[in-house]
Amino acid sequence: MGQYDLCSPKTVRELLERYSLSPKKGYGQNFLINRDIPRRIAASAADGSDVGYVSEDLPPERIKGAVALEIGPGVGAMTCELSERFEKVIAVEIDRGLIPLLGDTLSGLENVVLINEDFLKLDLSALIERESKGMRVVVCANLPYYVTTPVLMKILEEYPPSAPSAIDSVTVMVQSEVADRICAESSDCAAYGALSVSVALHGDAEKLFNVSPGNFYPAPKVSSSVVRIKFHSHGIYDVYPDAPKDDAECGIFAERVKHIVRTSFLMRRKTLPNALASEFSKDKTSLALGELGIRDDVRGEKLSAVDFCRLTALLYKEP
Ligand code: SAM
Image 1 (cartoon, rainbow, N blue to C red):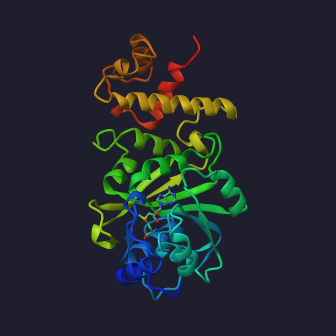
Image 2 (image 1 turned 135 degrees about the horizontal axis):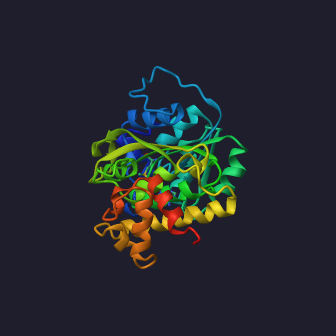
Image 3 (image 1 turned 90 degrees about the vertical axis):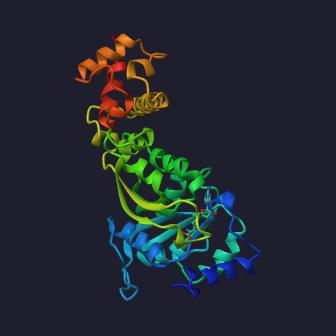
């Protein structure tokens, strides 16, 4: 581990002061100040499931052939934990002011590569190709709340739907309400929506554990939860085996599914034939739903990811 106790609120305050910094609300800077939390998140990301409380007395083993990609290292609390568990850590931080501080707190961690960029703007697959050299990539982060959904969508959609993603899984802390939306499976759950379907098209999501505001400096107004998304090993075919076999056609199909999902949830209170009426005649949608054995007064929120794939295939079928 590094030379600082990066989860001590006193140390975090002193470090920020030394580098003439203060937590930036605009970058969603809420730093973890309970070491149990980054340790548990990093250990869960490495293990593939929630490992519960991790004793400090158990020195972790580094996983060979696995890279952790961290978005927003902050002062480096989780980065240190990841560095102990993964062969390599790529940490992407947007805040230029934090870079010299991180140079200090992460000094001596030879397996950490620090990149000063906006994660949303970088070429993710080029970065992964350059830095991971074919190793398994696991995303792990305490995500800034203001960009949670765009960050997740960028990660999910970086690789073509017809192929397995170079990213194996994503273990991230997000606002609890967003965690519910990410993990909602059942259409009977109020949190179920476009985000739940998008996630389900790419992988299997589960909520691991909750984290209360008192574990952060400064404390956010909302509660947080850690979620894990394990990517499907055969892309969209794991959800819908009948997706087009040709790569380009599969890409077009996936775009169409996304479009239908977005449109259906945009008008969530309307029945599907009405919600999609600007693009497909109500008769066409009703007929397609009938073929799927679904009542035509159904709303989008009742359809699963595979239902959306089947419906898309029928709606775009050549006559
Ligand atoms: N990982 C640290 C921890 O757990 O204590 C800090 C987490 S803090 C919630 C979010 C971090 O993400 C901050 O360091 C912030 O500067 C950084 N960040 C915000 N937007 C970003 C972006 N678009 N790209 C990369 N980093 C970003």
